[in-house]
Image 1: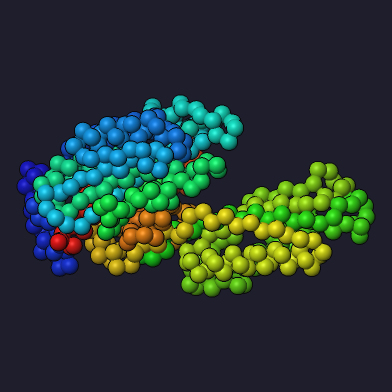
Image 2: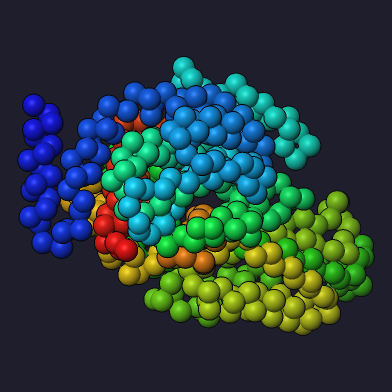
Length: 437
Ligand code: NI
């Protein structure tokens, strides 16, 4: 009965204007395959959840991935960019090369949510022993991509092109002395070449969106992230005689205020948003000693390359000139980390109907830009890419109390994952159908 219903629905899709690219032969099978593999999907996610590993240390994780990919008969390449895995699936017919990407790393957080498969893993991070937890959902990303690979491999003969599966380490950032890592290193090591990738798709689970909802946006979806360090050098003195000093604490305070006016007064906010946050200030040791230096550390978020460049220039100018006005100096060091995640406009427009067909039109929303960052952006710098969010906010929970990503209580609704699998498979098949060779 279920099969008959699905077939009827699929015929229905074909009659919808604008969705004529659907491969009817495959389409009727994908939903049924995803449903049948759902228990395995959940089991895989729980395995990864229980065995999390930090960035560039995803050894057991990659071993599990390699083992599964080989079991589908795929050509597997390991290691790539430290602990990454690439697998190639050549379809039975000629066509474009589609890449699908999942990230693999966990975070230095001790899990606290009481799940039966909660992590007990510990590891060293920054010289300290810490709990390790999949607190951003990368466990779900790997499980979804493995099941998508299994489904696509099953229909290899009908595939009109090649699929490249990318399991990428260190999305959260490689350890400081192993930079660059993650997607940046994958691209440098040639993941988008041999064969050359025509389009790349990726998703991120999102615990604050309703379960099964898909959210996307054309253009700037997620922000670029850059770090800024400012060292203000003045002149020390007794706290009672500030006129003998060049007080770096007061200069640092003025610089923080000045930096905020870059966003509020000098940035064209109707074009795109921007954020400058100073999250750390260090100066002095005692209340009655004016120190010689003050150090500021901050983070910068933008959605536009041009704006990013301008904000960097203005940060330098503002810090240096404010310091100069007080007779101090300010050394500004900006570390460019991840560029903005910018969805290719034409690709997004072409593929949005696939998301609607996958989740139902009522479950697909156009989201606002998000000021978090994603290193998926590095792939999008080289090839057209489309990144979107999959809601996994557990039904019946209080949204206000819902723990956010990167916290010890983070959790997701596993029933959302089947939608993610279908989205990845459908995007691949539809893209191939639209770009037949
Ligand atoms: Ni993440």
